[in-house]
Length: 300
Image 1 (cartoon, rainbow, N blue to C red):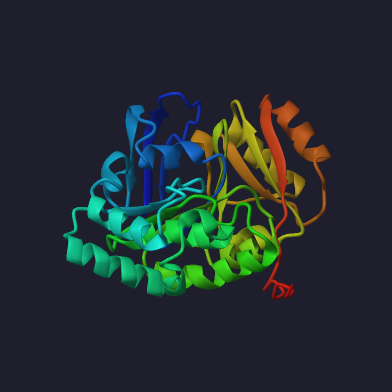
Image 2: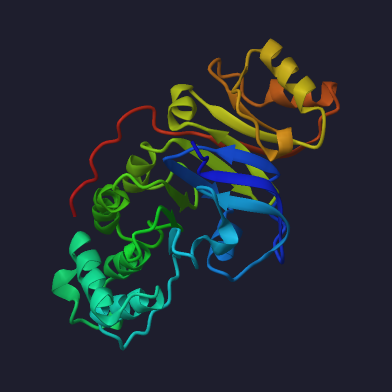
């Protein structure tokens, strides 16, 4: 089966993000942190200086333009004066659909997300959630093989986040998807959706710094993500001896470790181990996720 996200040492023009060699399976990958350059690449606003990224088997640089991937940008710009029906119909026409087919797909995508009553309303008069759903409807127009959704929960009120979390599984309909979030843990509505992910991939400006499943990261009392300049293997062995559990998946070109601190050791032994094996730490941060089903969001 083709991996959902494959990176082979990509270098972005105008961005320091370094993803090294990476392969991650879906069907749902949640990208945490500094993944904006990947979405800008998908949108055609950035290009690669070297290396490659593939999304479900196709080059990320061509995935959206070819219709292979449907893209939702968190700041998707549409003309405020256009009616919602026009936004969807014109977007469908840009995919190469005939006028009749474009109108049909616009109506179908709107119905799928509960937007039909709003088709006659101008985009500028839509609520934030309705704007976000408009962008999602545009991403669905071409019946893409995969979806890429950039921070869909950003800037929404709790009730809107809860509604979006309920709608997203319907929109995905079994499609593989890349969905980014600014941070974890976040708001309860976002985290409820994130629990269904196949894997979480954490990135900073340094690149990929940790990866693991939600279950792995929520099982322990505390987790730490650690990136070092060198000697990651030696550090991992020393940390295991000290009582930490070193989770198996590695990141940051092999220099990123994900630790489970079930014994509540804190960071003291970790820092001592790094000094002992000459492994300078360039990034260290806690990861604390909800250990089980999250409570239902409160109604406003």
